[in-house]
Image 1 (cartoon, helix red, strand yellow):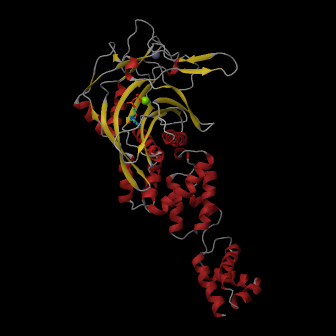
Image 2 (cartoon, rainbow, N blue to C red):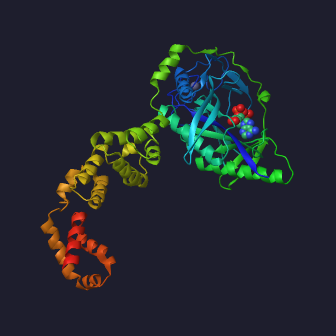
Image 3 (tube, protein in one colour):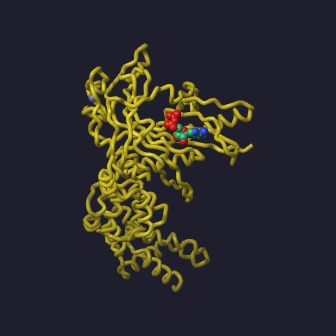
Length: 477
Ligand code: ADP
Ligand code: MG
Ligand code: ZN
């Protein structure tokens, strides 16, 4: 029997506000434990939460960007449970009436486009952080994170493979980053994902029983954990067993998951509307102001790059992978509008350099103006492509403009035919044995001669002229 995986993701994205969702404590990361706390986020009696408007603004941006319906009236609810990182004994979240629902995003995998439905988006508060001492029977709690705003995005069970799950997550992350509402950093925990996985006989109707995978803190882990889960469920069904609904924990060191607990049901949490918070009402003006503030999103930018600059899909995809990189490319287009050549240098040399140094595009030692200047020098045949690589290295070290380096180091390309001819003659004299071999039919040696002439001219000879003169002298003498 052939099985088909069915996958739905729940993504928690930490919103980049300065203060927490229901109090004015700072959200900044890395402070001494329990210093960003107050009676509200510590859950003291008698305090009242006050909703941070920015959290709503940011969530609305996501709702608009993912084509969701926005509920004009939504509600906060209490999700009740005990855990030492949750001082109030309940988490304020949204339940029956989330801020947004019924949206979708488009993903692309191997050139195929596909829509993934978004069931709902809601706002909630984060819990604190527990640290277990490995040596002593001791657990420490840090409440700096309690009340940090989260946006939860729940997908429809529309995903059919680990790769699709990866593409969906990357697309979501790219959108939150473009919107400037979250860092989208999985390793640092500001972008977290739970994966729900079930399998069913391919093409058949009802879904199978799902397992929920937690602790997926990198794209690699998400894909690996889902693959593992699909195989685990296949084996159970093939042995005539039944999948049980449960929460499983992924262990990245062992490359396997283990059962954590039976799946809790919504009614276990005794959700009820939070009596401390009024219904959240959103009017047309608010939505309109959000719509006008939304920047060009990754998909639109990609399409525009393909149209306006006639770039292949691959190049456009890579260049729009962050807003900063796309801006860098467009700054280059202002200085030297040759899209494909610029894209090649960015994808090859520049990103290679930044990767090697662990730098972001914003930290690039080579400005868009300087990169364009270099490409212009190649285009005007002032320098050869080979010399350009040397100049690029120097620019990477010093951040100086291309022209300056070329002038100072005397790297201007030699196009003077008589100078090149004399270099060719020197080489042919030095390599008389090879010249004889060549004349006896070993024409493969042509490349060797070109190399020698380039060496003789320290790489500065125009290769096209070298080829012409060499051919002429070898064939006609
Ligand atoms: P819960 O909090 O109980 O996990 P949610 O509604 O927040 O419930 O999330 C359920 C997630 O599980 C959604 O992403 C949904 O698409 C997915 N899902 C629901 N049923 C299945 C199924 N049979 N197989 C795989 N995924 C499923
Ligand atoms: Mg869940
Ligand atoms: Zn506080």
